[in-house]
Image (cartoon, rainbow, N blue to C red; front, side, top):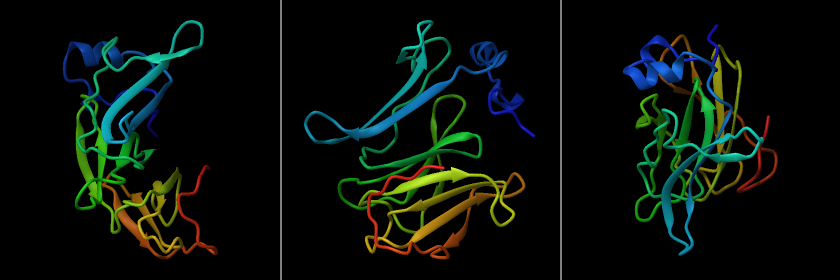
Length: 183
């Protein structure tokens, strides 16, 4: 098994990453993308950790943390901690819709990890959970089809990159758009 509170050896690339990886990572919250004060999509990313009083504060550029802004101006994105990294799939985007799902890499950069069958351009929801159909990690996504019943399930098997393991295999019983999901 792998403890997500600690780094893999491959995560250690320099002195800063070594110092960050020698102990448990602090509990953190990820907040990314959205709409700014001018109602425009943006790409801001914030990492919030607790201070000694238990209050959440920005730590994006402190104590060895560095995170690039998200590579796409978007709102209504979906995200989850999936396959031991934070993933964000593009939501609403000006112009052509995007199916891209990016992973936040240990060096703070974003890498396109996979593409959804249906972009979540109208807003979506998702939940990440454990095993399903031989996949150790699973991410259930819906909202890519405005009919309100279609879903996609992505999984990770045996250290391979994320792959779609179900498309429309799970249909919601009622039409529901822009829902809230939790595990």
